[in-house]
Length: 540
DNA sequence: CAGCGCTACCACACCCC
DNA sequence: GGTGTGGTAGCG
Image (cartoon, rainbow, N blue to C red; front, side, top):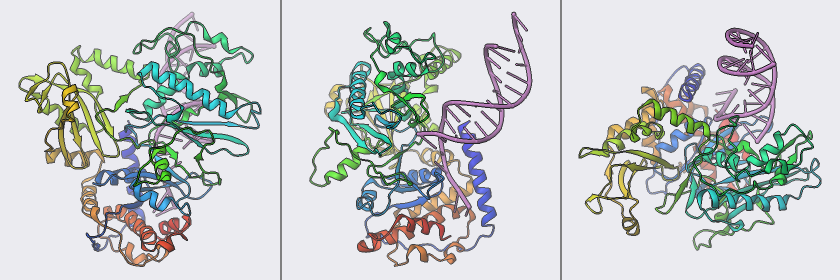
């Protein structure tokens, strides 16, 4: 359904491009200077194209959203590395109004968006509410996942104004992260169920403790409308439901609502960057007075940069000791159960629901673990955006390269490095883990690595050309030409021979223009306002 | 010329008592 | 009146 939607969108976009640029002309290849350090700085109008470009890059680059003009929430998408973004971002003279795009399906941190209207809630003590919330969340993490943390692990950012109390919390858990931000949302809704009940209550005058009978703290209260179905996955000590009445606030029209914004856990959510402001406003996210988190000191990285990196929700790298936390809704659990029942009772059939966003890679991994008459399967997968790493936990098949035989009671992992197009094996065995064992790398079969690109991006065959072109352009660095963004001439635009190539090249061209201005001259850089980036975009 | 991903809400069809 | 469905305004 989603695929169909995005395909339809892509077709519409393509149609409009053909209308706008019906004639094709000659493509002029660009010069590249391999001696210069790699630099990636590209702007796109479409989020999909930005992500496609990221997938074509060997470097660890990310998608950021930049707000364009005030009024409509229109955005453009920037692809660059954390380091390069910080280099241009830190002066705060340009690139105001930046957002991290939290990629769907990617491992990420636990985060919260908190807000209430000060006028509508004159009694509310924001700092106290934040402290109580952190306490509640830490308790929940402890009980549900046995993850230990405290307020010192919570990066607390403030963006309050006269009218609004506004915070972002980003949890810096040790050796733990969530599977993706949808799971974060499920977790947050789950642990806030008692508070949600308080606001959906018909009787406005009802006292909170009404709700708090015998119910176990984080169980019994299902999400959504299913009232009879209980949470089954997690065994919890029975205890009284905590008093979460402190989370209930009034919105600007006097209705009860939650201090915690539950609308920020959607796919590809834009989350405002540390020190960025919304486009209409001049209030940026800054370290809160009552923040207790202090990042590790480092010789190479400034403290500010450390704060910046800590604030990034999807900045979670794979490590052997990292635990991936999941939280399914009863709905997805039911679906999984249905699937399980409909496809016969064998355990491996559950694989059907363990498909990653890369079905071809899944198939390849399954082929790897179906050897020597053993029918292995994918128990689960996790995707690490920074390294573009797919980590598969394997079931049944336990062959370990380290010991040259199967493990008796520990499962293995297959790791697929999409950037370098290789795969290797690690495992859960404590001895192997202690040695930090990693097998040799083996190349991915070309049909897998290529086909996954072509199919997953839903490129047409023409687009495949565009894709390989952008791969070739990958090492390209910005030209040292002094051309300013505004000067990029129309002639450049008409010189492309392949209409399908236009899209990527257009964006690349824009980006280069912005890039030149940004990279060319350090002192000039300081004078470049956001509008100039926009101008570069509009000069077509 | 050009964002994205939802959810709440509404209108309507259909069904059952 | 209850329930499902399809389409969309508007929010984050």
